[in-house]
Image (cartoon, rainbow, N blue to C red; front, side, top):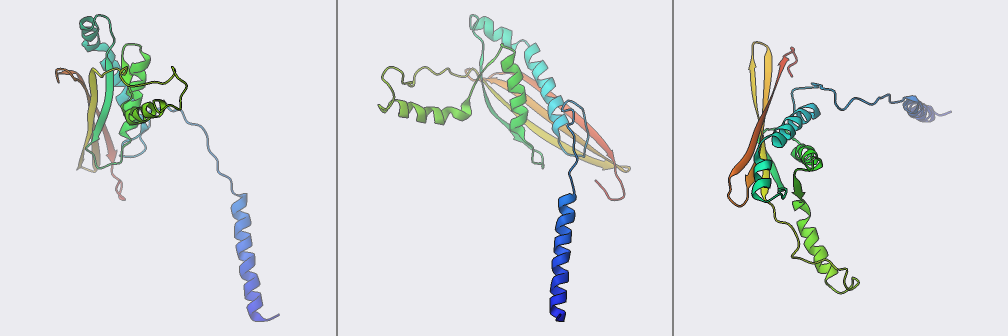
Length: 205
């Protein structure tokens, strides 16, 4: 057999052997407790978001702004429109997930109502479609019945990093607030701080 054929056959066997070895490998995993507090590294993580959301929810439900609004509005619950949370850190943080966690608990408490600002343009488009004549007469929805927001929910997340004596400290600060749309008064605000410290290895963090 020619020499080049032996080399080619050897190369094919090596490739096939590597493929067979890879196919025999399995990935092992297990479900983790989503409520367990974990510090994986020096960056914002799921535990940080959950701890922050818990404090924000408890504070928002306990402070007097809801009772004051209900009294002045003759028993009506406030409508809240989630605006945005500003990410002032250098990390890629899913701020929407944090807002969603807070919104869901406040909504499920039955004390606060939320408007879906993200769907407003789609709702307007749907109005136009339903009013175009293609929908059965009498069942079409139209403008003029939407609720107006009473409060904007906004916030910001920032971080500070300090390194000294072989330690690296990361401090996050999350601020959320509700602004009365009619008066521009801040009706509620809360700040959550999370401080994490790491001992630096010779390879760094």
